[in-house]
Image 1 (cartoon, rainbow, N blue to C red):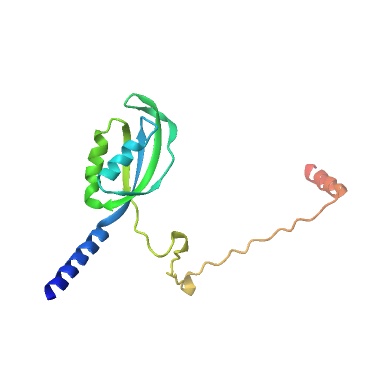
Image 2 (tube, rainbow, N blue to C red):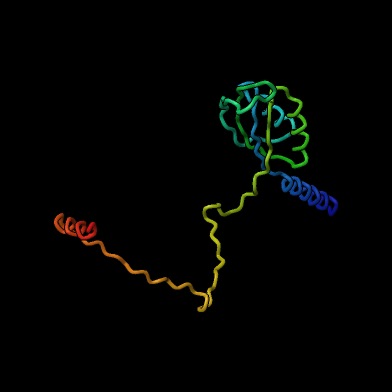
Length: 158
């Protein structure tokens, strides 16, 4: 009985470790062909699960890449084990239809959205360090009639 409990607890702890190793990644890629099947197949073959995918857009390249002037650009998000990312990278380097790609690790999600995070740090200012406003004269604009404006101009030009 105690052995089965130990086996169950060791299995659950191993599953927890595997789930902790899972990270979210995003890959941006430039392809020769319009179909992103090549990238999806490589991602799925390594055991990753795709959770986000963008439509493929045709772009004009700023400079030729492997003698191509136009290409297809897209990105997708996937999650899986961190150890498999290097193998995925080496798989994609061997694919002829993949011109360029970049894999980045997404930050871990917290319970608070980025917009909701507010710094709670306050800065205290000593009374001697307070910046006082310089007292500049405030000029009020007076509404002048045309005759008053002409008089003022004549005085200035004399």
